Image 1: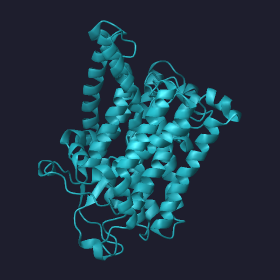
Image 2: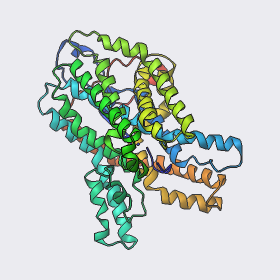
Image 3: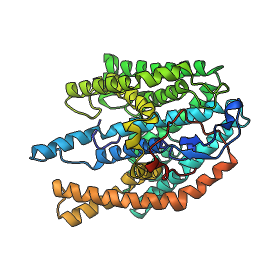
Image 4: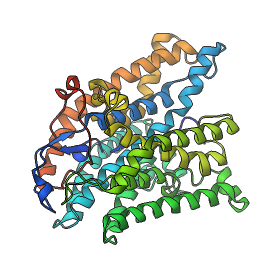
Length: 440
């Protein structure tokens, strides 16, 4: 896989980039515990999950703008090597996305218009800025002299199929000077959003839903072993046909869903934590360490921290997906991780992460130009540093403006499509950070 192609969004709604809106909300009142289907309380965001999302988008940024691999200085080359692991931010986005959407979906299992409200809320979160980016890219292509017939690849993006085998190459070959190659992650999430609520309809209990999410992860693992392990698929591997496919990348989302269902809701009728919650809390650190160790082992065998070798796909990717899902309960419980990820700056990055993910690649030609102009080079350490500084500062400003004046007014329409905002058992954070909580 080429290193200049991102392995996110958040959704990022997880987006990517992954669910940066009210799906990470924590109920602010415990009075609903007596009801099986509580009313919709005023909510607060969990700052530690915002911080985790902020870290995810920073990792993706470093993956694209880190540089340093070609330096003759060992220290700089080491930094460049580490930035190869920035694609892990996408895996973290995916896990967060599955975790957040599943809590809300399951807690509203008996709510009328649940699917309508869910899909409407996803559309309000994803489509406005996504559509704006596509229109900007198409307009830039026309200004560059492209004809209307040459804009056909944009239809692939319009229906979120840019990660499909044989369509991904056509989508990337659009005539726009504004790159859209990172949008494959949005396709993965939107396809998952389409099928997962329907799968949950088959579940007759939380435990059954948990088993379904684990079976879904098992299906992705079986797919990875087949595609990236069997000789029959050597041609597909050499052409990277399935590198961005839903079953290739969806394992982290499925594990995020499983984590949410296993931890349960603080608004259960009994008010008690389920037994699976204790298991998740007990073994989260073990899972995180083991998953990370297996990923590092496959990277050592492949001589790269990026996804380049088959063993990294069928072993390293599932392992780091487990680690990403395990990171969620680690930051929900009291301790150093929760304190660190509750920092206001990381939380702010998490709030604007979707726009940041969109713009940090969309505006790349501008950053290339500014880096070359002010460093007087187009290669080398000076160029990469200047380019990265411009990219970070401008993307932060543009993302904040976009979130404040474009995204938030649209997100306010979610009040017409209520879903119960469920987040299991997030523990208190230090008082110094509480004042920075934002109401949804």
